[in-house]
Length: 356
View 1 (tube, rainbow, N blue to C red):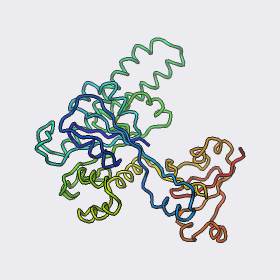
View 2 (cartoon, rainbow, N blue to C red):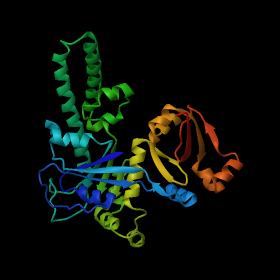
View 3 (tube, one colour):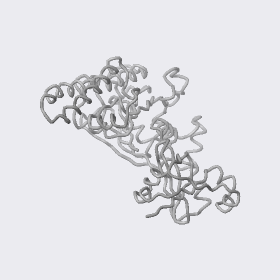
View 4 (cartoon, rainbow, N blue to C red):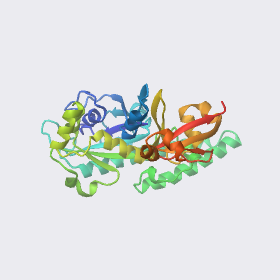
């Protein structure tokens, strides 16, 4: 899973990036004006992996991972003319976007609009993504007008279907609604795959607050898709030892590190969950979409396991923890054999039986 961090210049994006990835990327009080992308891969915190490791004592433990990309600041008005090629590509390459807006006061760091207003910036930046998509679709529709006059009958049919889809999406954008609100088939999503439509991507909004700011300061802005992080404090926390971090969390009334909260929000946004494989050699977390059938989950481990899938020996994490061992789970009949139609659940522990 890759998440692109975007926002206005001087919104503290890189501070949030450092907090989430325990990086020490330099921040500046001005924008360099150049396209810069900082990347870091972090383990997904999961207490279940830790407890399974304690139970099986494997040679190695592998957590699920998420990649964060800190992308150059988006200037106000970028959407009207269309975001530039390299910057658009850098943003569009992500599975989801994290939009950071500034709520902290700092006289040494200028805000592009000279005043601090998180609500205004959230609305404005989401509007920029919508405007960019309108520009992209409008250009594509203009191209299709000429392209439809040539090509094979099959190609003309495909372009006509694309034109109908794009016109439907344009109508949504003209209502100032993001494309992520539109229900699309898998085929329609494939059709749109190369267009870089930014409002189609899941979006997590992050308010980068001051040291003394709590969620209550931002009222209705804090909803199921918005997270308040005290970026500077979180970045300091990320560089501490576990003992220091726990004391720090208590002193500042932070319930848990921002990394944990952001990843949990991200999983919810993308409709993701984890299943596990366990044994003496390895305990490992795997990431899948909710609603994934067992053979497809097996293919995440290795393509041969999906091709030769026969059965999945399955136990729920909570059942295993309650019984204390696989031997006890077998004794109490909690290990099940599931077939190709089984939908893997969050926390399932799988042992794939394959004919290959």
